[in-house]
Length: 143
Image 1 (cartoon, rainbow, N blue to C red):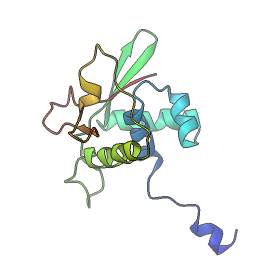
Image 2: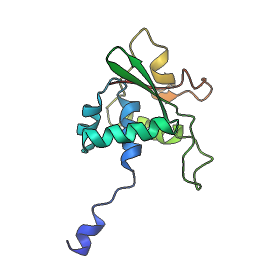
Image 3: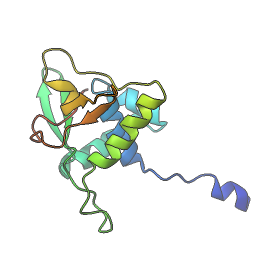
């Protein structure tokens, strides 16, 4: 591999960040759908979701034969340089990117509270609510 090839293989976001954003974008996606979207194996996604669950970034609830996951957007970044910032900032940034590119996040079914703690601002953009308790300011993933 040449030195120019070495520079083109890295990205700014980790697989953990990408999985977290996919759960936020599409709360009803299966782990295999997330894996296909990101371009990693389903087994890798399972490990990442387990990491995110163990560290409090997502909660897991068994419903029938499926797991439901909820993102905790108030959880803070792990690295000391960003430890005082909630992951909500990253999620909001990419949610806004999705809306500007015409790809709106999937809304929660009508029987749930607002789409994962999101509301539309006056411009019609979806934003995560900062003042909603963590139990309702989350996004659900059905696996």
